[in-house]
Length: 213
Image (cartoon, rainbow, N blue to C red; front, side, top):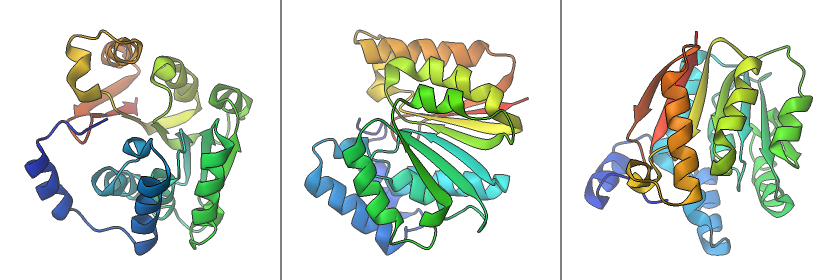
């Protein structure tokens, strides 16, 4: 989905954000050239934000729901310590193959494990301990609320859930599509949840942060 900010402001923010490593630039361009869904990919601003959050939290374990071609996973993995772990879930074996091919070229790729299959099955099969420090949700919008409820018990106290696309190009204001209605319901769920403190950011297409209390 397109960013909320106007193109000039988006470009200004992009140009004033830490540039990514060359491999991430290559991955972005590869995705644009080979996948018609390239708009799903996070870019410099959001990828850098995710990496900064992982670094600030001194996270060691990250769960990602929705790999796509791997830009966000690699952005976070490079901020993990050498013995850190990132588990990323995706249903599509082809995008997982692309992601793995780029992970294998990075010194940080060894920190990443791709779980191909239904993300809910993967999450529910995870042990309760050790908990995750950060969970990034960026998969099918209809199940955002379910992903959230499954992920929260597996998150440590003080841990962070980051959800992408929570403004859905503004459609959450008057949701008509299934995805927009699901995201609006998710936003309301997080807002009412006393288990977390939350903030919604107008970064790209909307990014919500929820810190477990």
